[in-house]
Image (cartoon, rainbow, N blue to C red; front, side, top):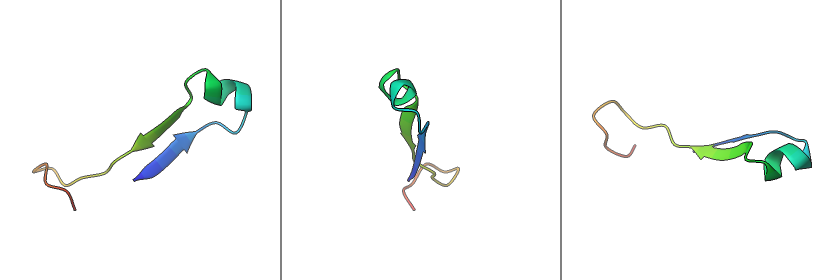
Amino acid sequence: DWAFHCHMLMHMHAGMFNVVTVRPLDGDAA
């Protein structure tokens, strides 16, 4: 999992914060 975010607090509260999960193409968790 990777955190994708902006360091400006106002931007984070506006929705610029997410967690990206990277998985193999077959869909199974690594």
